[in-house]
Length: 382
Image (cartoon, rainbow, N blue to C red; front, top):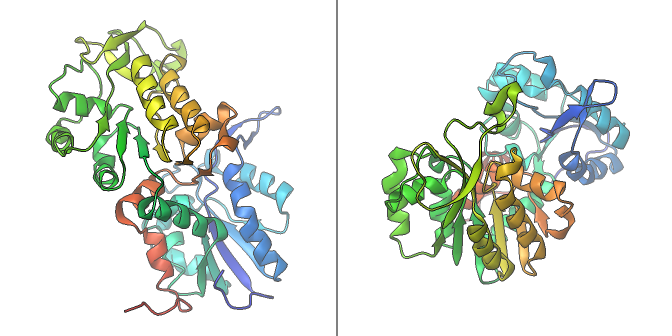
């Protein structure tokens, strides 16, 4: 890391410890997956070995600027203490509204008593939040080891990927990913689109989508992408829920109900498409397994509901079986691999879902731009 001698200095490290929690044997919340914590350890070790005093800070969940005990860092602090007891961990940054508002007064409190800053929170670096963009202009700053590796890997995908380059993008809202889809089409050989947003593409082709999620304001955008001549794979069959059925979080205490059936591209009225069908999953898998480079970001179905998780599992297995270079964005894609015991068969698991997509789209992030404003940053090249 490009920092001055940190011996005896206090260093603030912004980490992304927004990790899943679960109820432990005693009823208290405990860390369910410590992957993001583990990825920060090399940076902590580098600083500790050089005599720094290290304070980490992170957000957790969505407390909406209030002191929500369900989002306390206490379970994370306990796990971190087991791994690196020398590290102090602040309470949830988002307990203060100043974090998301990038309030200069909140930045003042963060940097008080600190001599240097390290951004080791790739997964949060697409946010212009106080802890991400506030400290670098005030303190000698650097990217952490994992942060630098994320940029190296994702940048390499855009510069010189092994061919064919296949991207699989899932998720729900087309509006959130139109920009990255356009950017990917400039680089990939095949773009496979799954998840709820695939139905806006199907609507653009004139197919009936029933009660499936569709962004009517983006149909024309999808139609233009489909008319670009790029190779875009869309579902040819779907798994849909019958009218009146419930699924996932909306099921409530009664639990999910209703039949799920494999249907063709045209979904009848009242039916809701919630997963890619088996034929589509086979087509996606064939493209993935034969790829030289794979980027996967986002589930292709509602993985919280077993009836609509099979497509994502098939994609996960194909990514694990691919002999090319495989990169998986954070979030539910990484969780699917982990639950299937396949995470160690992927070349690179990114710690950022939205951040990885924004980096692919723009080639930069607010957190990276802020580091270039640090007093120790090299002058820009002309």
